[in-house]
Amino acid sequence: MPGKMITPIKVIGDHIKASVEAKMRDIVNTFCYVGEQCIIEARNNGDYTDQTGNLRSSIGYAVIWNGKVIQKELADKVKKGDEGVSNGEEFLSKRIAKAQKKGIVLIVTAGMNYAEYVEAKGYNVLSSAELKAGPLIKSILTQIGFKVK
Image (cartoon, rainbow, N blue to C red):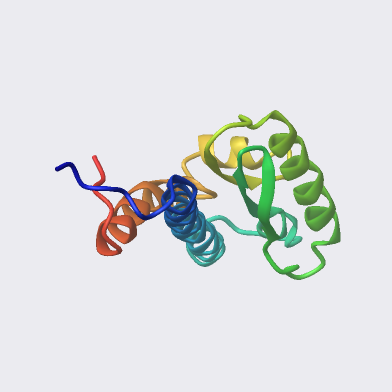
């Protein structure tokens, strides 16, 4: 005689959905942590002379999940870096608006218009943060039980 299912399909579906959402939150939290680490890396290891504080003050990140901003942070103001804070906020907002609307996205930016020029001159503005982000995400996700390629 075939077995009879006693657990309603809806209960099983709800359990699976909750489990998937918990795993997605783990991934999002990992991206938020890595974003913070990128800011620390960029601020502490930028090897350029920051005369005004604007460039370091313009560094920020955002984590977006299916088009919704989950976390958005800018580095603390350095020296008299008010312009950097303002430009960083504006540039990060523009990048968020252009971000893909599906999946989880980490955006790390330096909002001063000369950041790319400083990098091109061989100085580290965001490059070490970028190099750190991918391996750190993979390492953390592996540690918490995900299989990462």
